[in-house]
Image (cartoon, rainbow, N blue to C red; front, side, top):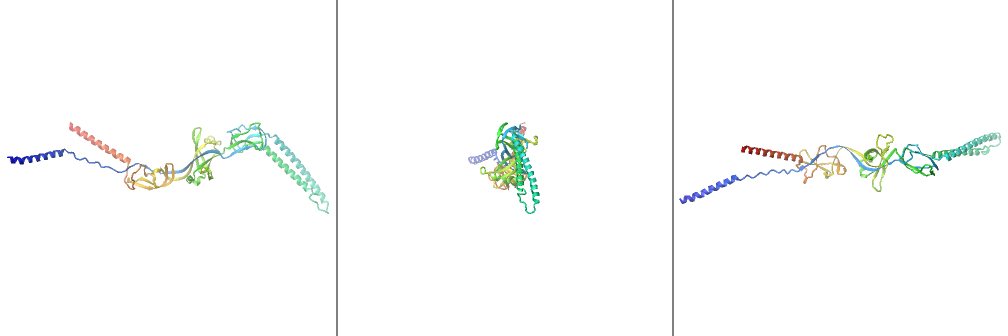
Length: 405
């Protein structure tokens, strides 16, 4: 009996141990499967847009008249008349009377010169008649030849000279009489007036200053390395001038008339001169806003035109290459041609196609041909996974509520 117990008890213990092991094994949860991690680099892209582009050059300057004239008295005398428009800021037409110097003395000088002329002509006619008489007398003498003095030719030449001198005196007197009237040499604006009614002026006295209103000029400094972007270094280039008038931003059209042809020793700039016709809009007051002399303006000079070009941030270009995302979502480097650096951007004329996906985000270890993913695609995938999880949780909740019932 005891021997049977020694055999049965170990067997029972082993069976109980196996049962307990299987019971605990069935209670153990299986290890959770780890989700597969997607290590594909995520990038952001922007679509390349090619369009016609005109390279321009920015500058600045001050508006000045093309012609400035200082009015100076050419005769002396008292100012007896002043035009009402001969004031600072007044506009005058070509040939308009501005001031008159007392003409009495010059009228008298003209009368005197005319009287001298009449006397000289009378003496000339008398001498011509005496010369004819002398010639006839010498024709009656056959045994000798007459001399120049016998025919009174020196006396005739002297009278002719006196007539010419009288003519010159008349011309001088007329010119001085005309100079008593100070007239505008061209359409202009009065910059200053230095005389008043009753003032006495001498020859060479400053009367005032005129500014021509037909054409205005602006000297535009341009760096030498910017001239390459202008057609023929800017000759006849179109310029848009911008400034303020009465508190509003206004733009005026202009043309490059010439280059000064030298580099300024102080600023190391080349200077282009832009011309503006009728700056004060005097020919057609409703056509445009006046551009006043002395105004500070910014200038935009239109230059070389490119048929297809794109402007992208400068930091995206390395060794004349840009990173693109191709149709297979892979990294691709494209060589580009940079025609100009424009601030924080560069202008590219070749190497890109319209619609190319330009990678604008940074990559830690970029390798040409590596697989990439877009931020939008990744976000969409995560949204779909979240939606699936929500649907699964809803289904489990329904099943639990059904079992409870």
